[in-house]
Length: 172
Image 1 (cartoon, rainbow, N blue to C red):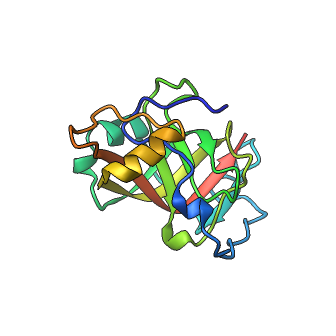
Image 2 (cartoon, rainbow, N blue to C red):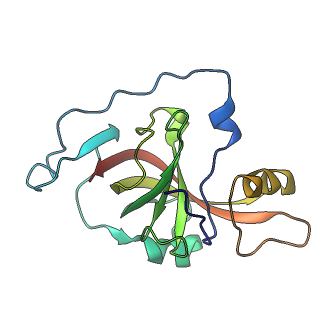
């Protein structure tokens, strides 16, 4: 399940995963959210409860991230990968296919994590959309771990679209 992403924002082990500080992850809610209780699947919530309501298509957010910059969005997708050390990030994609659009999801203030075996799950994520220019040294580090950047600049920098989640629901 360690497929490489060809999308703008690929997900990989970052320096945050390698820190020596051990932040305390928030405990996962054992009961599903009210919106999820009617669903036939077993959903678990991490972080804050995910708001109900209509979701945006992840593909739309990834096609035009500037339209959603610094806004909170509700999206659903497939967890293509997740940090296997602490669960401090995951890659949300429109499909498990490595060529499908996807982006990295981090967790607000490093305040919660997802299970390290989250890859292969479906997810509903409430998050703020960010688009950041990554320094060449960070791009190199990420590429050494399997990342691909579609629009890398001549100086080695690259733009990454990322979701900073306040809440995540996972189910299989």
